[in-house]
Amino acid sequence: MTTLPLSDYNIYIGTDIWETFNELIASEEPAQIAVLVDENTKEFCLPIFKEKTNFDYKVIEILSGELHKTLDTCQQIWSEMMDFKMNRNGLLINLGGGVIGDMGGFCASTFKRGMRFVQMPTTLLSQVDASIGGKLGIDFMDVKNSIGVFNNPQAVFVNTVLLDTLPARELRSGYAEMIKHSLIANATDWKELLGISDLAHIKWDKLLVSSLKVKQQIVEEDPFEHGIRKALNFGHTIGHAIESHFLHTDKRLLHGEAIAAGMICESYLSYLKSGLSKADLEEITTYLLKIYGKCSISDSVYPELLATMRQDKKNISTEINVTLLNAIGVCQVNQSGTPEEIIKCLDYYNSL
Image 1: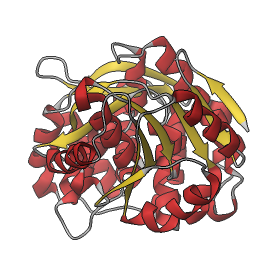
Image 2: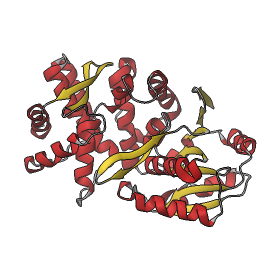
Image 3: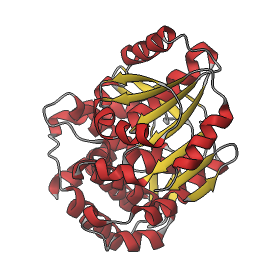
Image 4: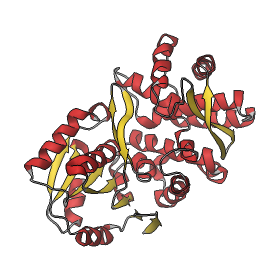
């Protein structure tokens, strides 16, 4: 097991986290414990959890997916915690992917003005991305993560055994965030990732630790996203808009699939505006297409995508805020893209 210490909690990574997990839960002395799951983690992860833990708890089950990351689902969680007669001395364990971690942490942070929670992310996406930084929240009016808070868990337990429960598409989605971390801050990792084409036989522990260290360093320097933490949004301004659009179609994209498209677009914007070389642009584009393929984005939805980008919480005034690459491993935050420039990026992606 590897331990990544942050300022006020630890992240434990590996296959042998259970003894430490049980000890931490006992040391918290919670008045009540609830475990938040969806139908997938109830089927595939909760049996492992039951076998490895030694304390009593109630289970709260919600529907999976970004479509249910809403106030309505929060009301269900709060209602069940009230039914369990939980109080602020209770503890919520979030056993699931990014939606469960974001929403469960948000519900715990607001219930009775704040109760403790522990994150046990079960997807590669949540393990490499949502496990650090204390960003919690829900989607509102089709804008991702537009209602939320910053609040840290008691601990995060990244059990890589749970990755064996994932379908290939979910693994691939999470891998996009590892690619992002390498592109913004670790060119050495990028070169290593370029050698990976088959995600089914990867030893994730080492790669996860290296990728998490990128986010750890950035978040510790800028915990509330006033500056350098915006580097972590590379690919997300355009990617989130693409994800939101497809959320209401029969061709829904997973988060990482949309972010991969966003990283191609924002790499092209970096080429136009921030000095990213043509060779680096082509290398990034080729690799992301090899892993993720391409989705079709009709130019008729460009106005909708731009409208969504204008709602992005990172924006300053009326400008669309983006993070751009100067080179692989070197990024620049608080850059802007005009509608005309962003349309050029979308056209570039569609031309591939």
